[in-house]
Amino acid sequence: MARTDAPHDGQCRFSNSGSILATMNDYQEYVYLWDMVSLKVVKTFKHRDLVFACAFAPSDNVMITASDAMYAWDVSTGQKIGQLAKLENAVLRLDVSRNNILASVSNQQTDVRLWDVSRMQFLRSLNRHVQPCRWCVFAADGTMLASVSSDALCLWDMRTRDCIGIPKNIKPYQQCSFSSDGTYLAVTCKHDVRVWDTRMQRTISMVASMQSDSGVVSGCCFIDKDMLATVSARDKLNGWNINIWK
Image (cartoon, rainbow, N blue to C red; front, top):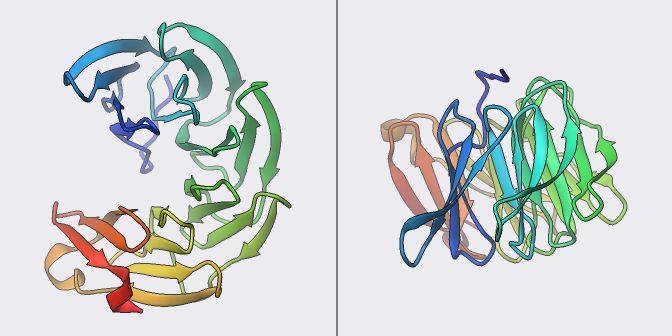
């Protein structure tokens, strides 16, 4: 069975509309869909193996689940509709752009792989990292993709598939998140979170005040274009207004 000790996508993922929550338990093969109105499980998907990641297509009618294989599911019927790939390593993170392009990163692999969800076909690999990738995420409009490894943060132009930026003063730790308008990219850097201006190609701020009392920053997520939420290894949640830190 596919197992990994590396950080993985973990636990839950909202649909694009926010009406459905997909949850996964560590080292189980089930994905549960919750209706956010009734707060009840409405569908259960049984993956072939342990599930490490999932993502919804833009219309929310298709969900992708992944371990060392990736499957597509019809959300309304709960039926498996196809297999995207059988992979050599467990997938750690999935994200789907508004153009139905799926990005995946796998345990111990340095490339980001792109897939066409509509045709269920592999497109190409993006290669720039030296160390294995841990995270990938699309900007809301699908024009940019960010990928994270322990050695670098890479920003990709999805129209040309070229790497358009590798910030020199950012050594990522695990995760990254775009603001809702794609202007900013927040990156967890162990004891702080750094915010990268994607248009000016420069670091605009460093949220460092969590270091003394909260330990390692384990996650970050933009709530909108200006508000950023961060969580630490000691379960401390903080909210930040990026405009104050510019």
